Length: 331
Ligand code: UT7
Image (cartoon, rainbow, N blue to C red; front, top):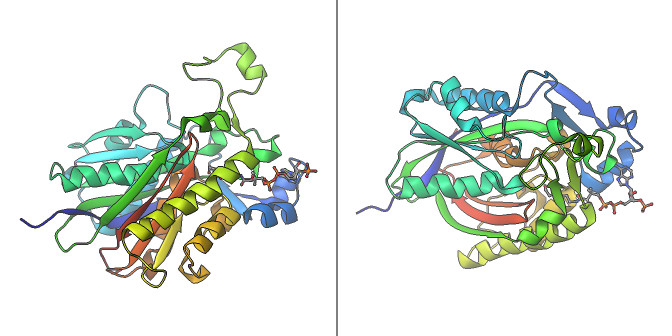
């Protein structure tokens, strides 16, 4: 029997129109373009300004982009996964709403939360269903409205995050193309260093939590940076070693976009020249669950069938890992 692999057969993306530039941030907090650019590589981010629109709006637009490009009948989708750290509502599944709105009426759907590693882990979930032969079309969407949980008076976080969404369709492949290997890890110690303190079961919302600004993202940037640099690079190196991939074999590194210095450290560890490193951090900042699919959408026209891609991410929790995938189509 031919082995089934899970291949990405289409991608889509969406970012809101409003551009929050470094110059604009200079008018809001004590920061400057030189500091932000040299410390992170970020020049601007997109913000969903409409107060009536939530993460589902971003996800729906990205899914519709994919559906239109691929001429996909949404009724043929079996499963819709929404990877997000900012669901519309805490209890109701955002994915269920997204699936209904895009016409995926024969699908079941649920959310995945692993902070900035949500999409990476979601790739593993999507692939497992396909490889097992359980489902034929799995739509994985990474979407985050980070602006809904950012304190725009906190210069340690507001310069980093942005809003956006990306989508990827996973289908069975019998040519040996698709997800080849994964190395996924987590360490619960990390929740002390990157979190939103209130609003969960540990600290439900109260007047005090609002007054204390505990419904915003808190990050101990230096500590997260140290863990991110070593773990993301380690995971990518592990994947290369396990699959006997030399630097000349890898066509693209697809790294989570949190900080240019973390991306560079990962690429250096892999001995990879910068032309093989996907990067759009200057335009969008850190969009959490959306960084990886936004990269795929931005670089889709340069990807060729058979290209070897190494994905790597690190996020809150801590969660991190790397995935080796071969690209399945020419554009
Ligand atoms: O995606 C999920 C995972 N998240 C990450 O991977 C993020 C990891 N962390 C980082 O990317 C970096 O730690 C940051 C970009 C958040 C911060 O960069 P840093 O080089 O670690 O800066 P720092 O926090 O050590 O601050 C250095 C200096 C401090 O001043 P002093 O004490 O040296 O006088 C800060 O007060 O820079 C100051 N500073 C700023 N200055 C201008 C901190 N934030 C700002 C700012 N503008 N926005």
